[in-house]
Image (cartoon, rainbow, N blue to C red; front, side, top):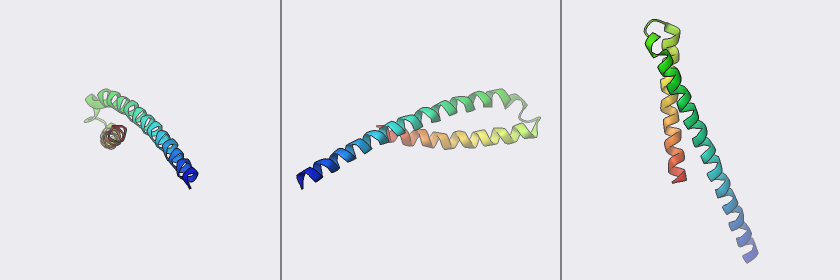
Length: 80
């Protein structure tokens, strides 16, 4: 019985470590994408009002930025 409990604890510990590593990768990727979005927004911002396709892209990027902000906040909360 004790061996089973120890084995289960070891499994859970390994799973927790994997979860932490995954959260760190998620955070890194989300932050990297946020940097890309910021750059693209700055690039197209002056022309947004003149080009409808850029206006649509700008809106998509703003929405993506908001979603990524939530992802980043969640990952930071999990990582402490």
